[in-house]
Every structure is written in C-alpha cells, then in structure tokens.
Image (tube, rainbow, N blue to C red; front, side):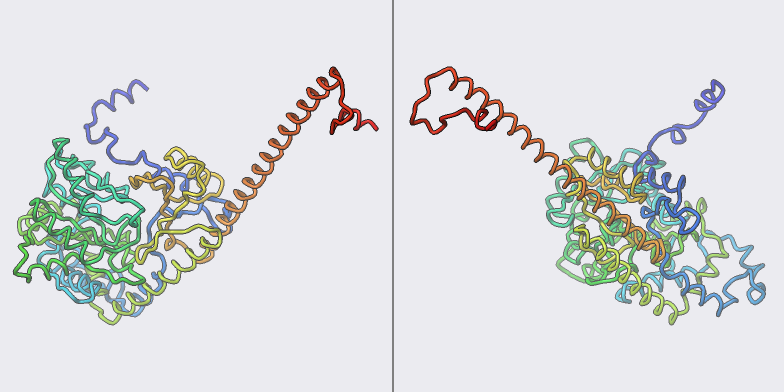
Length: 495
C-alpha cells in the first residue's frame, strides 16, 4: 500500500484531480448497470440501461446499404483495391471526400437552408475531442463559459477537466420549460464578473440534452446579439440536429447567423460562432468517434486542425462514411425513417408513463425524455431526489439519471433514454415503472389507513380517559334528577 501511495504522488495534477466528473450519479448509474446488466433470458431481473443516449433504432438501414455497397469498405474483396491508398493517408486535414460529404450532410439535416464549407470542417475524436480542442483554442485556464442549466453532465469533463476552464451556470427554471431568458443571461454574466471570472463564451446544446427541446429563431437571435454585445464566443452543440421527430423543425445557429448577416441594421461578427457536430446520435455511430468542429473563425480552424492530430478519425472510417453520406437517396430515406421511428418510440414511452400519471417536459427531439417525478418525493430537496434515484436503481432496476447530475436547480427531474434498446425491453421497463408506482400508491394508502387508525385509537383513548374522569366527578357529586346523564356511561355499559 505504501508503494501504491508513493506512485500516486508521482502523477500529474490532471491525472489525480477530481475534475473529470466521474464522481457523479450520472456515471454511478452506469456502474450499477455494468455490475448487473439486464438480459431478456440470461439476466431478466438485471438493471435496464436507460442512462445512455444511444440511437439503436435504425442500424438495419445502414446494414442493408453496406450489403449493397461492398466497395465502401477497404476490408472487402470489392473494396480492397483502395486499401493501400487509404491505409497510408495521414493528412490531418482529412480526406476531402469525407469533409465534403460531412458538409453536405450537415446542410441536408438543416433542410438545405444553409451550406457548409468543407475547408472549415475540422475532425475530432468524437464530439468530446472536438469540444475540448475548441476550448483549448478559445480559453486559458480559469476562463469561464456560460452554460444554461440543466446541461449534459460530461460537459464538466469535456470542457473543464484538462483545459482548466470554468462553467458558469445560467439558471433556467421549469416555470417556462427551462428556456433561456435575457434576464438569466445577464444575471449569469454579472455573477461571473463579480467572481472575477473572465467570460470567454456562451455554450448551448440545440437540440437540448437533457430536455429534448429545440430553440426558436428569436431565442437564437437573442443569443447572437448578446455575445456580440459582450464580445464573447458562441459555441453551439448541434449533435442531435437530425433526431428531431416532431414540430417545430430544428433551426441551426448557422441559419440565423446567415439571416442576420444580411440584415444591414444588425452588426454580427461571424468569427465568434462555432458549431460542434457528430454522427454519434444522428446516425447511431458513436463507436466511429466522428466529431466535427465547424468554425467561422479562420484562426480557430487553423489552430484546431493542428490540435486534431491528437484525435483523428481513422481514414478507413472516413472512406466508408464518404461513400455512405454521398448517397443522397440513402441519406434522405434514412433521415425520414429514423425520424419516424423516434417519434413512434417517444409516443409509446411517454404514453406508457402517462398511464401512471407521470408526465415529461414536452419535447420534439433527442433520444430521451425529461421525466417529472416531483410528486413521488416526500420533500422537494436534492436529498430526497437521491433517495428516489437509489430506489429506482436498486429496487426497480432502471438506470435513469437524476436531474442534479445535470446541474438542474429543481429537484425531482430525471433524464430517461428510450432509443438505446429494443421494443421488448421498453415494455419491460414500463412494466417495472407501473409496478413501482402501483406499489407506491398501495404503500401510501396503507400509510394513510394506518394514520387514520392511529388517530381513531388516539381519539378513542382520549374519549375513554375523559369519560372516566367525568364519571369520577359525577360519582363524587350529587346527581340532579334532571341530568341528561342519570347514570355513568360505565354503569350503562354493564347493563
């Protein structure tokens, strides 16, 4: 043990600090699942993973495309002719065909209302790598970024851990469905200034994780005006852009920027705007680690491209995706069908919850719902939220993520993922929730009955005692012939 402790002191501050964020209920739920994972036949009573935002609803569509296009992979007989060139390519700009197909796909996801320049595409090892590279470009240790709550728990890791940047929360509340307001923006900015934090930017997720909502055009315009006035950066995480399954449609910051740039009455500096994108959610390809930084700032593009050498996307993956995404017919069919499947799953899950009186924040995007369990808590505190969360993890065997891990300011909200499992598992999860709520109602009814019984017994004892006291007094005093109680109740009870 002494040797181990001595080795620990030889590690760096980054290696040994606790800023990774892993000591959060968000990750604790994953660990609970890893220790006892659900399987329909091998472990039917295990923990169902509902804390992981994966899109597993449409891989069959990609599999069918692969079967029809064997040349897309250098690991097939038909595609092996490209093996040497692809295996030896190592320019960290990335394959042009890949950057072109990504740019076109980003435009298609946004309804072709805006175009993206392939030369502004910078690769990263997933959205995590792209986000961190951008932070290294924009911030020095100690600099702050405004982020509306609730926000993705791993932002603490992605944005702060190795960069030394700080997150300043913008407090959003359920009273207006957690929408950002001008007042909340100004308040967060002033709080940072008072704390001697140099504010370098504003970070938003649109569509939101964990809310599953999209921002309207006016809100995005407000944000653009705000960052221009303060001369700070705006980072837009748009990795759920193609998961929109209901109205309103998704509006990208790129569309609003384009519109405001052509408005002579508004002065907007596009160099302050940056977009983070990925194929992990929209295409269901998290294992490919495709992260994209798109910046309107030439200096950021240049610097981030140098940094991308620490987390490049393999050329084999680039080659495959360039072929897949350049198939316009496939892309169109995939986006349409994936959206349809997400809408169906969302409807099944939310309607299933409603049978138990459980509601969720109205949403139109994402792979999850923001579930309201405030009525199931004894008190509106985060301690009670943790009690309820542990009950759900240990007894109901569902890994859902408590709102406190998303830095929500109100206790009782939970993010629940619905797209990372098959339909049968969803039904089993809903059955467990039904049983949990039903048991809770039964326990509540029993507690109420016991409470009433205790009150009745207490009243009976009080009545009994008062009657004895009364009888003793009446027996010791002369009885009036006109008294309404000519005899003691105890005497009457004996006759």
